[in-house]
Length: 212
Image (cartoon, one colour):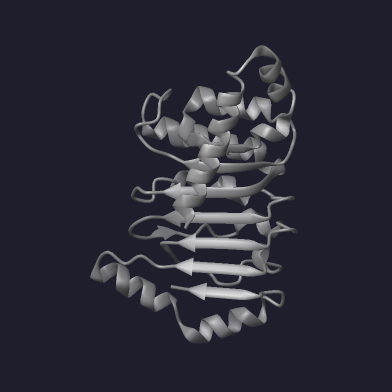
């Protein structure tokens, strides 16, 4: 589900890029409309991502932070991670959707402080790990994400269930991917029904809860 959404966003931006190649008039019209460039995927590499951020000007944006050592424009993967989270930090104030895709061994640990920033217009938050488990950042969004409504988590452990920033959410989707007996043990320790019921009392606007 998460991967297909990211691919759809990629295709959308790629479509607008192709449109600018039709003729000069179409290019000028496309570049003059920042909303056409508001779905920003980091999979295009450093230079392209910077250009998309520039073209989107100050309009609300969607950020797909999907990192891969194969992406271009970076000295190494650590450089890519630091740079990507710097972009998230600089644009958190205008991000309505933030999707973090993590396929490596918890490589973002030193960058979680970025997610402690206020998220004034964030509506949808995705933290996705394809395999294994990743630590959930405590104190996320400093408890200030007033319009956050949809949260999708996969491969997360140490989840506190009632982050202050999640108090007004309407949809919470949690998937657990277990690769080893140790992963299963950690997951089972944290998915306790009593904790879930207590958390539900603190999420008065919740309309749907999915735990897989």
